[in-house]
Image (cartoon, rainbow, N blue to C red; front, side, top):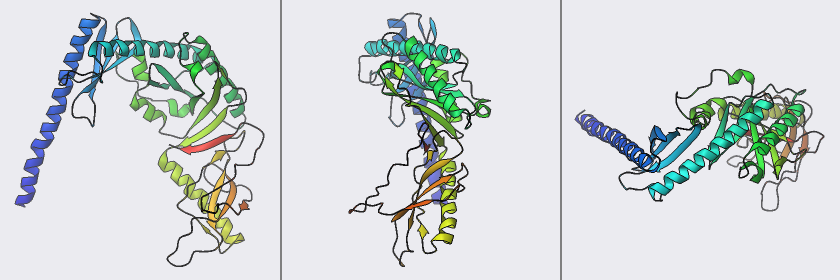
Amino acid sequence: MSGRRTGWAMAVPLVLLLASGCATTTKADRRAARELAEKVYPGELRVVRAGTLFPETSGSEVTFALRDDPDAAVVLRMDAKRDDCGGEPCEEALRSARDSGERAAADWRALDTAFAGCGHRVLGVTAAGGSVSEPWIAAPLTNDTATAALTEVGACLQAWARALPGDGEAGRRTGMSVHIVAPEHARGLPGGRDGDPTVLRMSSRRLLAALSKHTFHTASFRWHGDTPVPGSGQLVRTQPFEEGQRFADRARGSVAAWLAAEHPDAAVVDAWSGVWHLAPGRVDRLRGYVLFCAGKPAAGQRCYGDRAALVTVDPQGRLRGTPAVLDGIRDERGALRLPPLPEAEGPPARDTYG
């Protein structure tokens, strides 16, 4: 009993020390950042938040709002204890951070205007390196609307790229994506703090976590110049990890039931979740491979799959149609060599788990 008391007595001061140290460091960094901003840009920047740079032992990420641009978030790494700003002289680092924040804000305004012109409200974005990317929108996706949605989103991206300033990032990318959530999952999203810059609110971790909480689709495009490559659009289905694992389990179970009737000695490989692709032009059918062994492994041995079943399943993992069995799926070294899924008309798609 006394040992437990001693451990608790030692743990409490340690926790308090860590907590107070983090709070003191953040406070000092906020003050130093505020003083730096007043020196370099008098009256133009306002500190809106600061967070410690975990797991580093000192320093903070300090975010400013810009007086004349409510969209811009100016983010500075500040370590008052070491008089350091991310390895750069602090005045130079602040100027660079402001430039990056203003470019991202201009990028956001071009994006927001372009998608509003297409009839879509942007729900969230990824912000990094002086630009924004991967916008989130809400739209119902069905077999009847999926192809039209790809065309529409491609037009929105094209309008965005053309609206960017001359040094905008969009035209220099090799690919661009738009995440699409079901309309019912776009309700009740966290709105951020009052007074925060728009880019900071629209790229907050809390908001992006809420948007990705449920299954969503991503429209991806290859990019050439300032235009999406015609016909390059893909719809990608992404599920939360646990949900994706349940889907893979059900798909394997469906194949196991089919094998039990058609190939009684076969055994499905449980350790392989597979890669699942949306069937071209559809959002209610997925195609992929399930690995199995032609015969049950001997006692103490494990089979990693010497056959594959090419299957089509619904979003619940239930088998649709008759699987096709492939052998010769491993090379002479035992490495897995599955052929690409058979080509079909319509935009190809794939399924991933986030």
